[in-house]
Image (cartoon, rainbow, N blue to C red; front, side):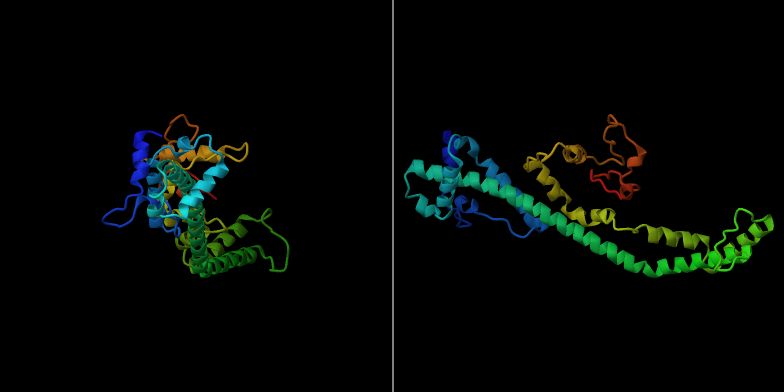
Length: 295
C-alpha cells in the first residue's frame, strides 16, 4: 500500500462538511430499484469504488474468509468507531470493506441489468398483445374477404362448398376469366387490393409470438446505462459456446457508430445495405446501435 493509498483510506473517514457524511458511509451503499437513473447512479458508484485504489493488490495473500470477516466488522462500525482503532487495523478493515463493496456493487449491477431487461421485455410483450387486440377486427375482415374470394372461385368452377375438388388443373379459359372477375369483384367489395394489402401488412407485422422487434422502443432510454455494463463487468462463457461474447464484441465495436449502415460481422469491415438501421431492424439484422433483433 503506497502513501497515496494510505491517504485515500484515511480520507474516507473524514466527514464532508456540506453533506455531513464520510466516504466510509458511501462504501455501504446498496442498490435500489432498477430504474434507469438508479442504474446510472450505481454505475457511478462502482466507478468511484474502483477509483479508490487496487484493493485486490492490498489484500493479496489474505484468506478470503479473513477478508470477509474484516469487511463485516467494518460494515457494522461507523467512521467515529474506526478512528479509535490502531492505524494498521483501521486501514485493513477499510481495505477489506472497499474490496467487498466492489464485489457487491458488480453483483448488484448484474442483478439490476437482468431486472431492467426483464421489465423491458415485459413491456414489449404487453405491447405485442395490445397490437394483436387492435388488429383482431382487421384480421377477421381479411378472413371474410378471403372467404368471399373462395366463394367466387367455387362459383366459377361450379363446385359446391361441400365438394372436395379443386378443378383448377382442368379449368378452361372461360372458367378462369369468370373466376378472375368474381375474385376482383370480391376484393373490390372488401375495399380494394391496395387497402387489403395495407391491412394484410399491418396484421402480419406482429404475427406470432416474437416481441423482439418491439423491444427497441422501450430500450431506447435505458441503452446508455445498459451499454455501460459491458465496460464494468468481465464476462466469461459458461460453456464452449462463445457466440454471446462475439455479440458483445460487436456491440462494443459498434457502440459509437453514427452512420446509416454498420459492418456485417465476418464481412472484413464491409458495409452492406442489408444492415440499414432503420429499414431492416425488424428483419433480424443489426440496428445502428449494434443491437440485433429478429424473428
